[in-house]
View 1 (cartoon, rainbow over the protein chains, first blue to last red):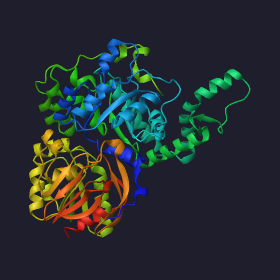
View 2 (spheres, each protein chain N blue to C red; view 1 turned 45 degrees about the vertical axis):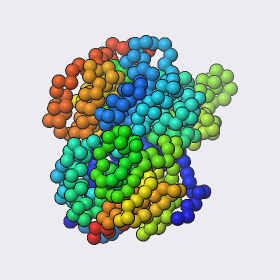
View 3 (tube, helix red, strand yellow; view 1 turned 90 degrees about the vertical axis):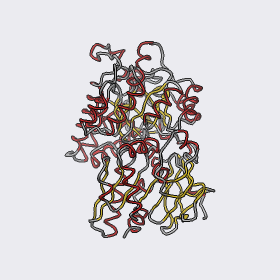
View 4 (cartoon, rainbow over the protein chains, first blue to last red; view 1 turned 30 degrees about the vertical axis):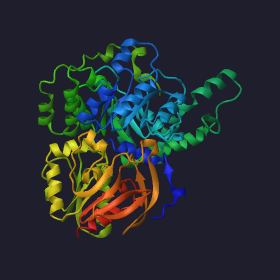
Amino acid sequence: MPVDLEKLRFGTELIKRGFAKMQKGGVIMDVTNAEQAAIAEDAGAVAVMALHKVPADIRQSGGVARMADPLKIQEIMEAVTIPVMAKCRIGHVAEARALEALGVDMIDESEVLTPADVFFHIDKKKFVVPFVCGARSLGEAVRRIWEGAAMIRTKGEAGTGNVVEAVKHIRLINRAIKELENLDEPSIMEIAEKYASAYTRLLESIRDEQGIRRLSKEDVVFEDYTLLEIIDGIFKVLMEVKEMQRLPVVNFAAGGVATPADAAFMMQLGMDGVFVGSGIFKSSNPPEYAKAIVEAVQHYDDPAVVAEVSKGLGEAMKGLDVFKLSEEERMQSRGV
Amino acid sequence: MYRVAVVGVQGDVEEHVISARRALERLGIKGEAVATRKHGVVSKSDAVIIPGGESTTISKLIFREGIAEEIIQLARDGKPVMGTCAGLILLSMHGDEQVEKTKTKLLGLMDIWVKRNAFGRQRESFQIKLDIKGIGPFDAVFIRAPAITKVGKDVEVLAKYDEFIVAAKQQNILGLAFHPELTPDTRVHEFFIEMGT
């Protein structure tokens, strides 16, 4: 059959968002080597996140957390047949390009690593590989979607084994979406302007210092986009959110999920799936924990199953009290 | 009342439910499309769809929940069964080394040989206008897609891309390497439903 090769397209929004849709109802697990990746695949994970350290250890060891060793990522890619994701630092275009060149299936532009840019995230529309990004609020989520993220996850507070912050972020986003329902277009345009103001921080600080002229909407503020174009783009995303009454991309829970019941809870709150970071390989019995969490996500609306799979699992990861973390220790504040 | 069940254990289930609903509407058939994660729904349906997702994950869950046996029975009764992407892999009789390595259990309803991730990883995922027999030109989205490398004598090839077969039909079973549920075009779902009416 004749095939029109000129119509062959890669990395379209449909392909990138479509990839994320295939992950729905699934569990994505953090792994640090080929052996852990095999355990995750065997337990029924839909994808793995390749890391050099799980967030709990990143937290403990301190210092600058960067993209994992490509050799390590490659080992993991060779070990499993399911998709492999990897993290780059917020705003670090070169790390992201390197991960794309390695062939990872999705990049997590993640606050778990030390941010490389205090002003901007990556312009993800320019990539063929899809991105997932963290968000604490609808504003953050909508900005990341406008930048081209194909998937959103809550930031939660990674490496704590404490689900409280993930729940907070889910509630904030869900309620903010509900609020849009009864707003008219001019009000949504106002919100778009407010959300877009995060992109003006660089130019604004320069103009302030120079003191000659004020920032205008025609100014190019991020990559080659004017503030006006950004407001318009964000307005369109917001109208889509209002219409669909959900984010227009797949939305996962992440950051502190440690037990099967935690995972089921995330699903009950309307999430499309769950990332489990330190929760599995910091528990006393990773293969059983991994399986139990997959089953709990599967049967999140069946308490008897959640109870059954939670039986005799051994100890969950120890965890941290999020409220005792100092501002610098809170990863979620990174990247707005 | 015509009922299309979408196996809803994992993957892009909702997209199939919406496409099937719209296809029923366009065909003027009074019916419903429902997602199911539990035993007992597929057996009471007139057609079943296995969506895209991760074949390793979906396989584990449908065999554990007893949904696999229900799909096999529905197929034996001559009702339409469609698998897209991961669903295509599960429909097949002959897996490749990736299927074997992951010990993925298959439904074995189509006499076809499949290759998982035949086109490469996500960055090699693509979108192309395909010519599908019985449907016509169709905007097909391939995501870490499998492909059919060989078919048995009872299998009809519906579309090819490169050297690979990407759509095939064996009596009441329809297997696609791509995702018709990701585009608003419902012709594939209409074709599928009409297979059973």
